[in-house]
Length: 320
Image (tube, rainbow, N blue to C red; front, side, top):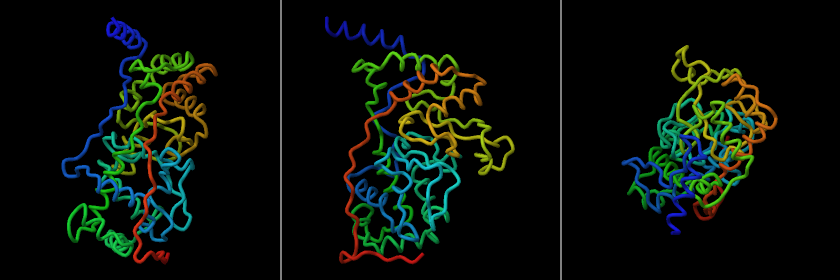
C-alpha cells in the first residue's frame, strides 16, 4: 500500500514538472585516459589551490573560482596578473564536469583542456610557458606527489591538467530543493512552482533544459560588445554566440552574463526575456521565476583545504 501511494505521489509530482527538466546526475563522465583515484584527486585539489602556477605567486584556480563562494568570485571581471582585469565573467566551476565544452566560447573540449588555459594567460596567471609552470611545480616540491599518481619523472603540464580536472569532477552539487521535489523527498513553494511553469510557458526551456538546465548549445545573445564564439572561429555567423549557461546554483553566482553586466538575478531574468524571447515579464512573473531558480541551489561538496608542499617548510618568493 505504501509503495503504491508513493507511486501515485510521484506521478502527481511528475505531472507538474514541464518536459525536459531533470535531476542532476550523481555520476559525471570520466575520460578513459584520466581515471579517478584518491591520490589523483588529492593532488588535483592541491594544484587547484596552488599559487605557484602563477608568475607572481599570488593567484590560483581558486582565486577566480572560489569554492567558498560557489565556484566564482562574484566579480564582474576577475583580477589577474599585476591586478589586470579579465575580459569575461568567470563561470562557476561547480558542475563543470557535465559540460560538453568549456569556457563561454567553448574553446576547450574537456576539463583537461580548460585547466591548461589560465596558467598561460597573460592576464590571469601569466606563466611564461608550460615548461616554466612545470619548473615552478618542481621548485614547490611536487615531484613525490606526481610520482605517487603518475610514476617517476612525471611532473608535466599535461599531468597537472589531468589532476586538476579529476578534482574538478568531484565538484558537483546534488540535492537541490528542485531535485528533492522531483524525487518526492521535499516540496517547493507555490511561487517556485509558478515560476517553473512560467519559464516553460514563455520559452526559456527551449535552451535551459535537461538536468543542467542548459542544452549545452551555443546560441546568439546580441548583448554587449563581446563577439563570443566568433573570436574562436572567425566566422561571421558566430558573432555574439555564447554557450547556454546552466541555471544550477545561479542564485549564488552573481553578477550575470559573459560581461557581468546584470548585477542581480531579477535583472538577468528581465533582460533574457526581452532580448532572447521578446517578452516583457511582469514584476510578479520575475519574482516567481527567481523563486524557482533559487530551488536549483544544490549542496556544495565538503572541501578540506589542502596543505601545499614546500621544500623544507620555506615560503617561495617569486619574481613578477
